[in-house]
Every structure is written in C-alpha cells, then in structure tokens.
Amino acid sequence: MDKNTSSPNSTLKLLTTNILYIGLAIGLAALVQAFIIRPFIVSGNSMDPIIENKEYLIIYEVSYRTRQPRRGEVIVFRSPPEPKKYYIKRIIGLPGDTVTIDNKKITISNKDHPDGFVLDESFIVHHKQGNSLSTPVPENSYFVMGDNRDASYDSRNWGPLPKEAIRGRVLLRLLPLSKIDYLPGNQTYEETN
Image (tube, rainbow, N blue to C red; front, side, top):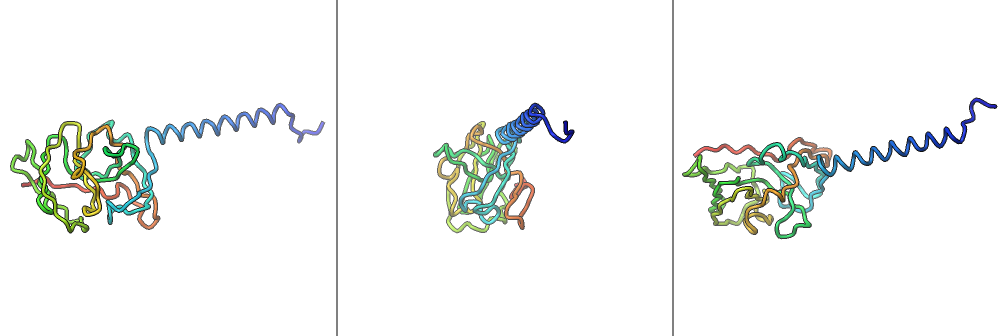
C-alpha cells in the first residue's frame, strides 16, 4: 500500500475538524460582534467635518457596562423617534444637567456648577442657525447633538436620549485609510465658569 495515499477515514476526520474550526471561528466572530465591537458605516452629514459620510468605524459596545458615558464622547445609538435606525452624535449633557442653548452658546448647569459653564466648541464649524432652549436631562438619559448643527436631527428635536438606546462609543475610524484614528472626534470639555 502506498504511504502517500490517505484513507477515507482520515480525509473525513480532517474535513470534520476543519468544519469545526470554521464553525468555532464564525461563532466567536458573531459573539464579538454581538457583545464587544461592531462595525458601523456612517450615513449622513450630521457629524461633519469630524466624522464624515461613508466613513467606516468600529463601535465599542461594552464601554458603558463598566463606566458611565462622558461629556464629549461620540456615540452610536438607536434613534428614539425611529428605533430601527442608528444615529451617531456627541454627548453634550449628562444626567442631572440642564442644557441651555442660546443661539450658538451652550451652557451646562448642574449641582457642581449651579451658575453654569459654557462649552468651548471652537471645533464646531457648521453652525449658522441659532436655537434657544433649556432642557433638564433626567437620570439615565443624555443630551446629544451632531457637530454639524445645521444638519443634525438630535436631542434638540426629540429630547434627551435614554441610556438603554446607546449601542456604544466610537472606538476606531478604519476608513478612509488616510484618516485612521483612535477615538475619533472625542472632546474633553473643561468645566469652568
């Protein structure tokens, strides 16, 4: 018998092993995508120019299971008016804040800053129209806005975002290759009077 000839049993065993490995890899990939990270392609211009239409992002889904969302973070969430759609926006107001918008100026008042502090948003370039409103942010909710204020449908329109609608924060920008970035768009707001 030729030693290079494999038996039908060993071929079947090899095929079964390969199928098991492929199934395991697909199962692990599905678990990672369902509970840890998820790809997201931006559709729309509400975050221009920081995050643009058709950019390919990775969303970190477990980030808010271990800590609370922070002001300035860019998040992906299910839209309250259209729960089957996903939106991408920036967190402006936290639970317990009162967000006051006067034209283009955003003031945050809370127990630590009863007189409020103004957000430095010098990075915002698309903001021609002015709004005026004052909204308290309830517990387990966030006030979110797009950076392209003139083209964003956000908490100014439908109110604070419930925490359970948040899918995760933007972890990576992978495409276009010229703009690969870690935590793209994240801002740290100084909380001063």
